[in-house]
Image (tube, rainbow, N blue to C red; front, side, top):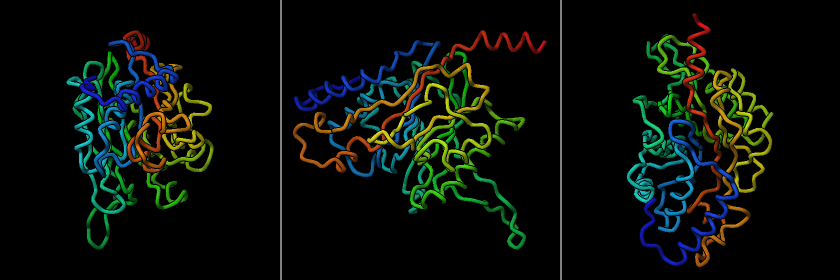
Length: 318
């Protein structure tokens, strides 16, 4: 981390933030053995310039993990660049393009990662929804719109190669409007895993799915093709500030059971109030959600030392 020269108020806020982070009990990762991954919706990140204090807070939170899928990154990447500068020279970002219309909301998805722990392995693309050939125009047209396409990227940590698929499912269409895109996401992952030339079949799905509760129609839609929640995230892990909505998710397919550890949860930087972080800032709670966020990071630890598993697979196959 390169916090550099700080004002007294920022230093005091960072001290409070670090105490809150410590309560999340996030274990340190071990090179080639484990990594901590997270998904975090940073509210309209880049729409308006954040205070310098907020950039330091965001960097401090991101630094608790090795790889973070960040949703709601806007077209202007200046604040992301400022955050990477604070994180230091080992940090990198891979990000999608944005769609300028109201449905796209000028949003991107960004993967922010520490290159000492995680390597980007080349695949970066947006998922395309299924298309059908129109009988009249002979054009291949999408059967459904995600509004914002899920973003795919491939990584390697230790002996584990994997693909992340991150989505920010529409909010404005209401709960019923989210069922079809969530179901499509599940179907897309299921189909891609079964294809012969898929880049990697180890797929982790994450992001802001705008699912209020586990067990509702929205959750059933995204888990209808075999995706499931890691055991470490069972129970309550509300990712809104009130901790009572499970908007953000990390999901996987059953073949990855050995990779997911029993350590994971939510990093609660809010703890019922922004005020101890921003002592001298005269902004409302809502205004401060545009400085930090109205979502909390959801995280889990992965065991990336899979060499014994690979050897066992070879032995069994022969």
